[in-house]
Length: 180
Image (cartoon, rainbow, N blue to C red; front, side, top):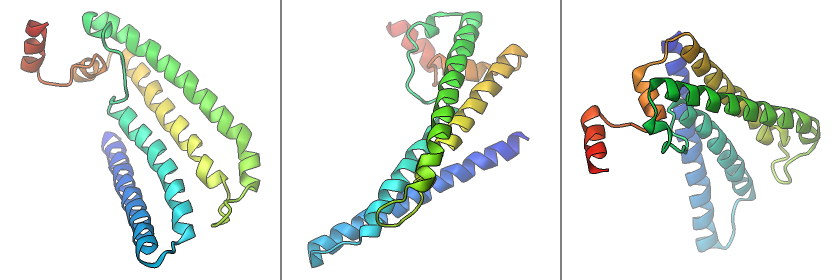
C-alpha cells in the first residue's frame, strides 16, 4: 500500500513538472510573440493562469506530505516525544477542520462555478476552482492518517523530528544545540 501511495505522489510531482513546463512555454511564447510581432495568443494567457492555480494547490498537497509547510517550531523543539505528539495531533485536528471548511466552501460554490465559463477558452470554472476538492481531501486524509499513526503508536521517530523542525542528521542538530 505504501508503495502505491509513493507512486501516486511521484505521479503528482511529475504532473507539477508538466504544468510548470506548459506555463513556461505559454508565457515565454507570448513574450516572444509580443516582442517580435506585437501580438499574442489569448488562450495561452488564460490557460497559464489556470495552470498556475492547479500548480499551487497540487503543490500544497505534495508539500504537506513532506511536512514542509511553514510552521512554528520554537515551542515544539523544546518538548519531549509526548509533547510533540500532542502538538502534532492538535495541529492535525486544526488542519482537518480547515480542510472541511475549504471542502464545504468549494462544494457551496460548485453550482455557481459549473455554470460560469472562462471568457476565452469557455472552460467551466468548476475545472479551475474544483481543485479545492482535491486539495482539501488530500491534505485532510494525510492529517487523519498521521493522527491514526500517533494514536496507534506507529509514528516514526524521523517524522516526529521533522515535525519539530529537525530535518538534518543528529550531528547537525547537536551542533545547532551547542551554538544556541
